[in-house]
Image (tube, rainbow, N blue to C red):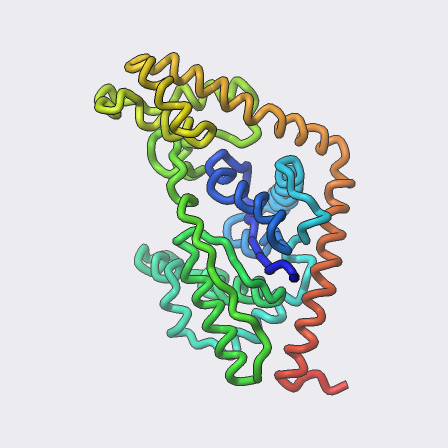
Length: 320
């Protein structure tokens, strides 16, 4: 039986942190064993926030090195960047012609920007249509997303249904795989780990960076008192070790926050050091790493081109 198809988008928007890994990347690496996976670097989407050409190039290269170091297998995954497949933007335009402005005005990102009286660019308004094109070109069965992205999958399904109704059966309707943990990986201050909050532990951090981040974890003398453990330290530690291992340790070191933080530093270093070293090795041959991305783009282009030929046939523009 053929494997189900899973598609995941990756934003080239800076250094990843352990929240990104435990919230999404770890799941994707596991999924490559179970599904036929398309993993695309959504560089055109990233243009909404990244305006520097050199920063964009550096970010894309960094994503390639990051994911290869973490264990993404290009023999199992079609790993590519959005801009290598022009069919994404072509299909987006076609979807624009069957989508109304009132419908897109329901999108959360647009409503949020409007509520904040921001000057809204067309990219922000049209973001869901490009995302729908990203997805539907590859006939995926499953799209792993956080709860905050669920609406985009609903919009994608609506768009596919509308196109199918107008032009005939063309697109498969994908299902959202809601990744419940993606929004709750805690940062050093107890809030969601996020670069915008400055509360992250970098995924490829050097030892001193790990130490500095862990020692900055907020501990309140009253927090976790009943369980005998500092809540924020424990929550991050729990990403690395199960409660069955941690609970006896934390109970034996009740109130000894410095010792518990030192143990967390040690465990983080054990986790990070091997992938940090693999990434350094990959950095020695960046052209080789980028060749993997290029090859993935060529593979994706062949798939997308077949789908677009079908779409052009359906809409009546393929006359020779």
